[in-house]
Image 1 (tube, rainbow, N blue to C red):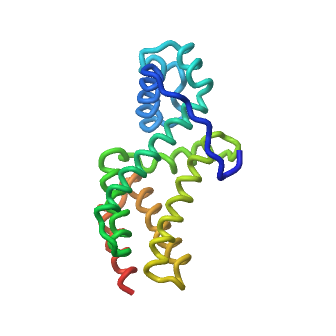
Image 2 (cartoon, helix red, strand yellow):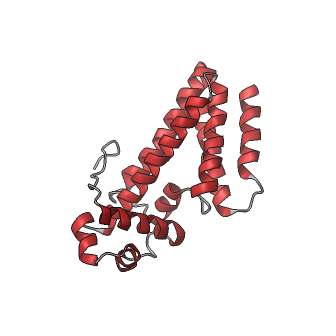
Amino acid sequence: MGPEEKPRRVRMTPGARRVLEAAERLFYAHGIHAVGVDLVAAEAGVTKKTLYDRFGSKEQIVVEYLAGRDERWRELLAARLETAGEEPADRVVAVFEASRAWSARYGARGCSMINAHAEIGDPAHPAHPVITGQKRWMLDLFTGLAREIDPAGADRLGRTLTLLHEGVLVAHGLGIVPDPFGAALDEVRELLRR
């Protein structure tokens, strides 16, 4: 599968939804490799046969877990950007504020994409395009906003904003920097004033 291709997705039945909810909870809390399909099936209240009938493999469950989180993130971010107004700098700030809200609700252990990439790493894994696609999408979003702020320096500003964003997600997950989102927002506001 090429980096721009969409991964295969599974039609969700009530049982499949229970599997996915259990997998999301367990994968995020304990790591993808640490959680076996037996535990996912038991937590979901389905048989292992039902799990495999619906998903086919653990790898496909991982795809669904990450793709679902990415879809929810994009929906939350779209709503935040819609209320941020038309000023590009305000929209950049809104992305960081949306990440703060998302992380407070869904991300105590950091970014699920970064965590999954650290575990998977293999470009041949079917979830790899979900992970890299989400990060490319964020780079494109920041670069597009940067183009409205500084057309000549858009690529550099887009990369800088992306690095700040990814860094704050990692720092939040590690818990070693007090209020990493506040610190990143201070840096973003300073960067955008130049």
